[in-house]
Amino acid sequence: MLSNKIYKHFFIELSRYFFLVLFTFSLIVWAVQAVNFLDLIVEDGHGVTVYLNYSLLNIPKILTKFIPLSFLIALFLTILKFENESEFLILWTSGLNKIKIVNFFFKVSILVTILQLFFSSLINPEFLNKSRSLIKSSNLDYVSTMIKSQQFNDTIDGLTIYVEEKKQNGVLKNIFIRDDGSVLKSLDNSTDSNNVTIYAKEGKIEEGSQGNYLALRNGTIQKENDKNEIISINFVKTNMQMEGLKTKSIIMPKIQETSSKTLIDCILSKNKNIEILNCPKTDSKIDTLAELNRRFGMPLYIPAISLILSFLLISRNESKRKNLFKYFYFGLSFLILVTAEILVRYSGKSLFYSYLYYLIPLISIPFFYYLLFKQFYYENLKK
Image 1 (spheres, rainbow, N blue to C red):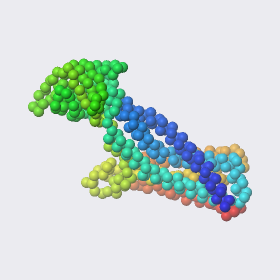
Image 2 (image 1 turned 45 degrees about the horizontal axis):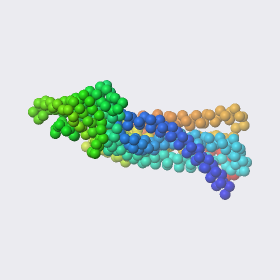
Image 3 (image 1 turned 90 degrees about the vertical axis):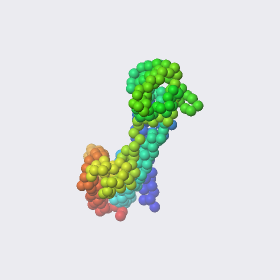
Image 4 (image 1 turned 180 degrees about the vertical axis):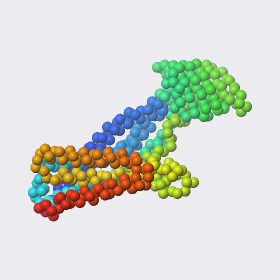
């Protein structure tokens, strides 16, 4: 009964530190990324709703990234707290075997490992794919923000816009528009909008019943007909519909946004004629294999971290030596996480490197546990 209360108390403290560190780091990184994502409005012309939803859908990716580090810091701080408040000393003198605390650390690390596996293999790819689909399906709501003076604005796929001057009231001066992708769907003076070049002395983006449109004044429309002849049409006023325009934003899912099942099918598939998303036709599938290792291999290092920090339970009388070992085990654990992050980028070069990436934690876990078991099990404490 006493041991259950101890474990519950320790688990609550550990969870408190874990979620505090995780959400603090994630919030900082999310805020920085949210600033970078403002380009969706400023550069690409998407609406505020698209920007907010896109930013929120990237939160699981940030959380997944910081789970191992948050667990490392949380476990380290919890051990220090219990040690500084002499709670560990009370447990040892009451007869509790240290190996039981080690086992408890290990069980908690398994829960955290499962949590990261769940996020990295299922939640994260799904949310990232939804964020990409959001960009793909959204229209341009703030076309005026992406049009900058004295710059060739080619944010819209197939359409280039140049404006010599942009006044504060939204009036555009000396406008050049080139349509190479049949983007222009509505011109009052044109029924065929293929390969169109437009020059206008003045223009302004207006709101109409059918959405935003670019009102152009005093200009010329040049287009190529079926006989490859250039036809010029002068106009006093014409309107260009701006609804339904798409940007050059990457709309194809990246490998990080591809489901784990699809990536596994890519690795196992021997038939090069089968079309699989983000699956190279060549035998070299470095990025695919590395991404799978990141999702399924990286979480395996978390239990190893818990065992390394368990060495802090070893009793040491000298304060200087004690502090030295605190920094040593924390630094070693942090170094392992950094090394795992670096190695996963190269683990996709071959199956041998992938096997090695998985074997490192799978071998180190029983090795560290053996050392701890040997150190603690035969102490004169209650089994």
